[in-house]
Amino acid sequence: MLRFILALLAAIRVFFRSSGDTALEVQALRQQVAVLKRRRPRPRLKWPDRFFWTSLRQIWPRRADVLVIVKAETVVGWHRAGFRLYWRWRSRPQGGRPKTTHEIRALIRRMAEENTGWGAPKIHGELLKLGWEVSERSVARYLRRIRRRGDGTTHRSA
Image (tube, rainbow, N blue to C red; front, top):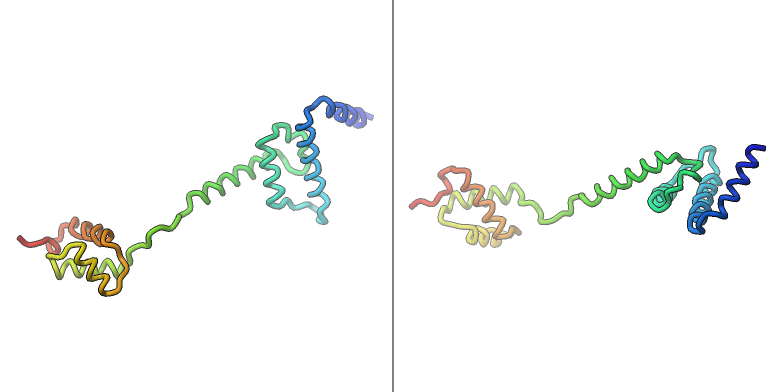
């Protein structure tokens, strides 16, 4: 008898709510029924189900009233996991210019040691003649690193 009275009060309460709120509740209940109709002993929630509940969490504060198959804490956990996944995707390496290989760096060092008068433009030109794809700026940057170390073999003699 008590359940009947509570169900009757819940049905009457629907008439005093906004139509948008009622539509969201109907959509949430339909989604839960669709999950429960799946032919397993315990229904498995797939990613569209999780997406539905995390989206609903954002726009409808009363979602906890109609949640039957999942707890509100579970929905919050899914939302946080999606947030972490989004930011992991946003901060992934984007690629960019390929790294200068060890072989090219060794060749630049050897040319700089054997020809102390050569700068980046000359070494870059020689590397292009040998068939190596490297920019002049990369050669200049690497020459600066070599000369900054302080070994006297690459300094120009005056």
